[in-house]
Length: 626
Image (tube, rainbow, N blue to C red; front, side, top):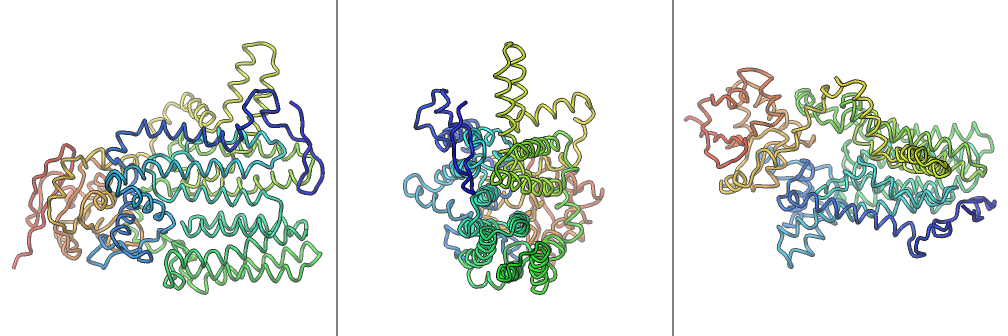
């Protein structure tokens, strides 16, 4: 392969491999990395839509958050205010629940439905938008990967990154048809921040990254570790080298993060959003921390000491100032967003949400699929960093290594963050895969060349993780039987398949709108499929009603009756085959869930006949005795 000279970030000539079209592979000149990315993603998306065509037609949602998201979008389209994020059909006895979700995610879904509704009607418009929009968002991510990883010492990474992306199941899963929740947005915005971190240091690249980080936090405060990680990387680059461009990048990042957070908060929540003190979403405590950190960084930049230790001390002071500001505005945020949950909710709901749990509660095979891509990417990144001869290239690989290590450590404690770790692992996997592939091509003998090529293919996340998992389960067959916490969650989001068949949905829709007590995981699907209100859904701000729901199902019937009447519920609905009901039944033999499952209802309930092909069970609450 011929080399083409380019200039590094410092103006020093360096050689990188020419593009595939220059290498004699015969690709058409118009086949650029971005076009390859879009072609690959489009083909994969069309295949996914074809495979899931029946699920799309039936709106067979695989996650309760997707159902809740669409309930929120429907309310917006029905006239609920842009700044009003209350769910009035959740816990109506308590006045509803203010959601911690962002209108940034709602906006394109609502816009797409509004555009298509006059042409095909709202039901088909919803199906079309829910099927297509995740793929559009994923196409943006694919392009962002090409642009973000294009300036490496090996330019071929930008050409093959789209292939490694579509072979990353933890990432692709968040962009499948009907997956309309916020996780895809988190991945895209994290990639945009990474892309700017790899650009030549300047105030502009820092400010752009800061705005993307602010948008990430507006979508979900779960992005706070990533925003802090890239702030730390930018701070260490300036502290270590003391260069003016690194100082400008850091100041731009922090200033845009603080200003952008306030801007997005105002645009999506209004003036009240600037004053709220929620710990589970972007709010005043976090904005105060960003302002304090920005002020500390600005002070450090003005002093601009030539001593490394002084810069480190000044930046540490900025970090401490940010923490102090957050705790001064809202001390409870030190305990995390779930600290206020009732212990019974933690036991019967939170600990059963696998994606929010640490890696070690997963099945061994699942843990392998989480770890292998990150470790392969880290190995490739370290080897690439070591092989660089130009300082700018070494700094970019060092940035990737730092971000990957941070994301990988986070994925050990919160499983759903594995997708971001795999995103940052892509360039290292690609670098290693390219080297292994080129070495394999140089082998003269056919069979060894094929075997070596197969080994090179194992750098693809899906194939590498699958191979290691298969080898592990072959060596330890008993691991297949060890479901751990994963088995508890397997059926949590399968209500549409098991119980909410069309006949049952139609029967429930014929019942006049009322309030239903149902197991927590069934709450959001009930909102999505019917006109009814529910006591609780799997969303933590409704903590008192969530606790009442669980206590009603696991408690004795007299206690349950008091809680049901407190919540003004007139129906009790549950799925006989669901894992959450199994957990409620196992709590005590004489509890309400166990008695209803056995058909031994207390006197204040009467069965309601419903045409259901699944295991849906409905009980009517009798009026109180006078």
